[in-house]
Amino acid sequence: MAHMKRIVAPGSWSIERKVSTYSPATAPGPHNAGALPIAVWMRDHMNLARNMKEVKQILHDRQVVVNGRICTDPHIGIGVFDIISFPAIGKHYIMLLDKRGRFAASEVDAEAAKIRLSKIRNKTTLPGGKVQLNLLFGANLVADNSYRPKDSVVLKLGVDSDTRFEITDHFPYAVGNVAMVVGGQHSGRVARIREMIPVQGSVPNRVSLEELSTGEVFETIEPYIFMVGREEPSLGIWGITV
Image (tube, rainbow, N blue to C red; front, side):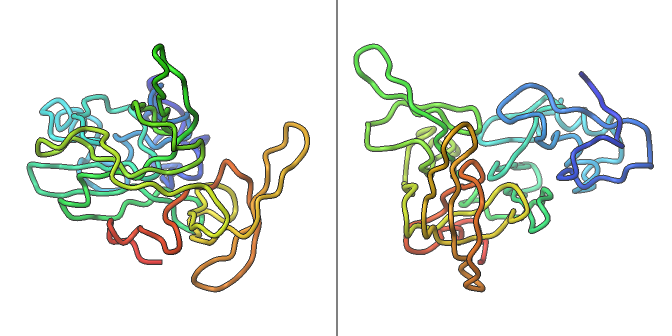
């Protein structure tokens, strides 16, 4: 599907509904169908292009880098903690969610754009006993068995001759560690995990958290948890303050 009607676009896209009938749709790729197409972000959010023709020209000229790889598809989806760079103009951005669950980009410096925070979706055992980490944004890498699903890792993106997907830090999914909520009514909140609450059946487990800035205690479901630090949040690497 190359396009969709604007009126049914996800609320997280935060686009005007009545300026035209259609909007680019998200192509199958590293994120789900609710991910924001890079064409929509460039045109409607960042005003880097006035129309789809200009978006396609910029992408065709290989001027856009997503997570360390050149992007040429205007429909490819971008999601939380993706790094988008424009080397020709020296601009770099990290994709986040605001408190209303809408996509919002924050500008970062060139050093911060060389690494990415990634959540481990699951693990696979390869022939020979090697362990493969399957990450939430579609990538995978071979590592040791000390990492667990729902943990987060900080990866090098292979910029400036760095080793691509080398792990530089690790934030375990554990009580006392710090997480960001990336879905539901508590989107964008950074909080410390107080308790993990198992739920019987197919309903997701729940997690009790205490927000760092206000001390408020709230609950959300486990899939919305994205680890961002241990005793303290490590988001300052990307210039994000809590």
